[in-house]
Amino acid sequence: GMTEEKMMRAVEGCRGASVTDWMELQEALQLVIAVATLIRTFVQRRDVLIGDAMTAALPLLEAATQLSLEEEMDTALVRAAKSAQEDVEIGVLFLLSKDAALLKKINEKISGSSSVARALPFQALLTKCVSLVYEKLFRGIQDKLEDLPRMAEWGNSQGSPGDAEDDGAPVFSSAPLEYAGELGEHLMTIPQQLEPFIPEETLTYLVCPRNPRQFSFTGGTADEEIGDPSAHEYDEINFAGRWIAALAYGTMDFFIEKICQIPRLSSAGAKQLATDLDYLSSIVTALGVNPLAEIGDVRAALETPLDQLQDLEANLSSAEGRTLAREIERIRRRREPAE
Image (cartoon, helix red, strand yellow):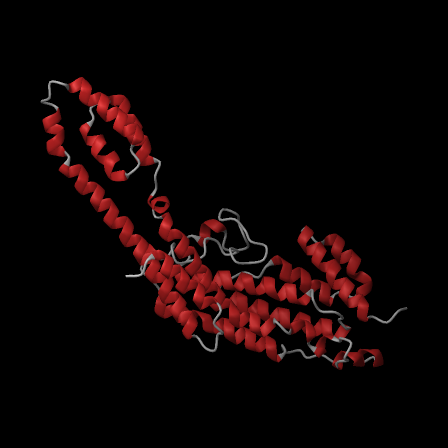
């Protein structure tokens, strides 16, 4: 079998590959499930070994009670327990000792070591594999949004349909643009790509992001409440739901980042962008994830007349929302003719 070092190099080698279809995602999912299964098997076998060692120590315990040099035995056991590091040693000492103080010390050693912590050598590999799955999921999103700031529809320096607003006839579509439609189709395809790889329930926590914002730009902590579901409810979500939530949050964050990179935004372009954002919100909702509050803030900043934007900013509840609204105003004013 492969050593952990070789497996880590294999994971790193996958990262540079270009995505042409869903095959690389499927391979990454197979890899993360295989590593999670390895960790579970390792923990199970280790625990069985500890149990076997403790059982084997019973005859030794019986023999120790017959020794005349009991005091020396106790002293030796205390000294050994202080230097013991391995679980098997601790287990044997637990059964051999009849000293109350030593019993307390050994119990503290056992209770202070969790199964997850003892599997740390494989945990690092698992973390890389989980990140790899997200990279493969997110690559399609990234490709579809990468060129968004340079699209002519927003009214940049190359000219756009939005220029017609100067003639009093803004040009924009009430339907999302092609890139947004492709983005929505990609997101709606994710559940069926994940379905064949749903692992056993005992592996779900190992092979999924720890919280729905783990890979988003703003990050997050495992115990913070983020939208709906909250972090607590997130623990009850299944394998596909966890990955869909993580990808949905990452997509919304990336969309907002790209909007803020648009150099100039005409009135028609702003309205079109608001339509595209509304479409993304409907897709995310259909996938069972509540849109970020920042999506609503950006959409409001795109739809609000320029002379009312400062009032909007003042009424937004979050500092992040106010910052985004000011950025949208800055971009829109670049395109607005001077009074």
